[in-house]
Image 1 (cartoon, rainbow, N blue to C red):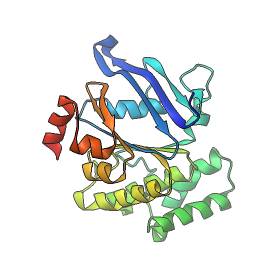
Image 2 (cartoon, one colour; image 1 turned 45 degrees about the vertical axis):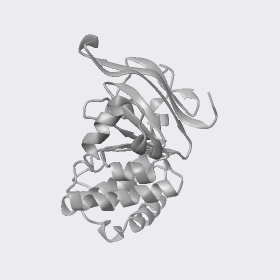
Image 3 (cartoon, rainbow, N blue to C red; image 1 turned 90 degrees about the horizontal axis):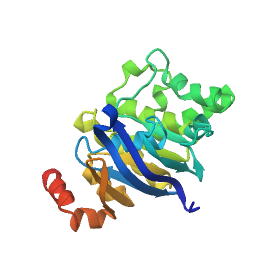
Length: 247
């Protein structure tokens, strides 16, 4: 284990239909503390499966995931303990519709981190302030726009004091004019040094914010490097072909 790395995936495999479909076909990648890694690639390339295997929302068919040096794929690992340190934001906001925004944000810290209600609320209100939604604490999810819900989903994950944030296409379900407000929050997080792994189709974000870009296709990592290298001088034909379509 290299102490610089917070996550290491070694030869990750994920097969479906008895091995007919190889969603992940031997993926090895390491993420340093404080690094922003953006994963790009065509639909069906295994990007989301890779992300979901990092916190074992999908159980890999083979290979291992080390988080802070602990093999969380081992049977003895307390996955819930490790998962608390990895915030996850999905395409769809997964907010509880019957709870206010404040309740959505304080539920897990009180239950899982054993924070007092007062401490959890104080932290939640500070985070809401940060994303410009302090006035929505008492609102219900149905009263918010998609962009607002996604900003809430991000700060809800931050309420758990995570060490890593995983984003699975966080803007793909949003109307185009709401995408910017969510990316803005993510850029702020990156500036503050949060370790982030982001699966996205937003190439502008990848270019501007990523320390490293990973290009995946057919369940494999085809190429990785700085945004500069990947976007202006990709080496692999498959990467060139993909970027020619999306840029």
